[in-house]
Image 1 (cartoon, rainbow over the protein chains, first blue to last red):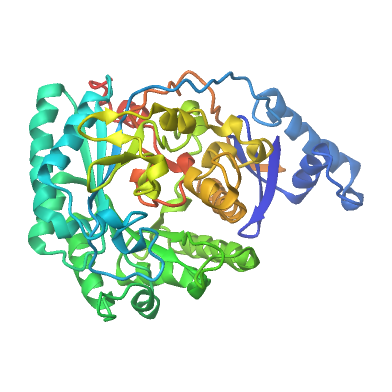
Image 2 (image 1 turned 45 degrees about the horizontal axis):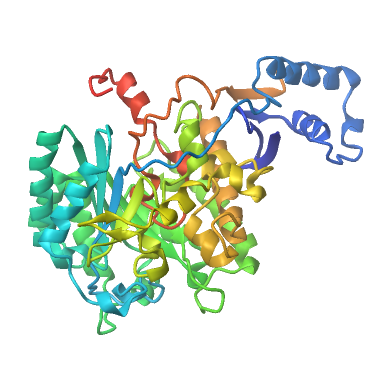
Length: 443
Length: 56
């Protein structure tokens, strides 16, 4: 399967099975589309036969090399394994913001029983022990301190990390810690500590001041932008790399490219802006009718990314990162994020869920951090799902980049983890087209 | 080549991609809601490129 597309006023092709990518002229694009049995009308009529033959020869050359119209040549079976490598640790369900779109329900997630609670140090240490015990021979282990607002349980983070550093030496493991914070209470002492211990720091800022303040007020409805940006800039200055400014866009800022550019203009150069996840009846939900605007926004963003590349205003947009020569292995591309298997979430009370999106959903509770996973059926349910069990992915050019999408989104919007969430699919495909275009142009 | 102006040729399914499981879990990187597995890096390759292969 070969997918052709236009982006940044140029034409491209991606050979889906090999992953090879090409910048092509419009004649080659038409010839590939013709080979794909698409109707190209009388497009070829304006070209001389010699030109057409020349382009066909070039296509044939890449077909012979296995880089165009290549066939799938692998067998893959999802064999569930009882090994974990990453935990999202919801260290606090407390929050000092009242974001209008919070998927965590303001910190209580799906269970009122854990509202406004912090994880105890004993439970946090048990997360370290659980991960080491269940990680098999994997060396690199990951823990993301998430919430709620993790800084509201800062001392427990520090104590748990110190315990992790002791244990990793004993068991020949390497913990990579991450913290995701709204940065409202971020101090210089915390920044210095994070720079020493955290593999990555993710800070939530939504972009333009008015957009952020409207979406992310404090608990009294007050504005937070100035304080958050001030703190985040100190972190960026001291840290330089291995951080992300991670924002959310909603129906309220469909022109979200302006928010990415606003963040870049503030001095941030590692930026990720994500579509909000909300039910269709929510006033801030992204809907299908928004798609044409949103797809165009990614194109605008790609143009700005290209324009700034190599200048002191350059920025890295998370979804435009792509490694066309290497990247993740086929196994990872087929199996996806690892939800319910190698990636799990631990709630403040020690309950284990398939991922952070399921925290508090009793029907998905897999066990607890002290006694381990008791309901392995849930784990196997997720682990058996992969790219090949998702029929809508069969003929999608993006399948080896998105791996079938977010299972939580698929479940919430499509009714099961193997269903497609159309909005996520369309946004994903456009982001991948932009990423490929930028990579090929800059190669 | 006149018509195919640039090419980045690769093979997703080859021996280099062995499934060692040491790479970063995609949800841990930044997004938490709209995962792009394909933009993750292969840690094994990074180590090889940096000649830091002692952990393999």
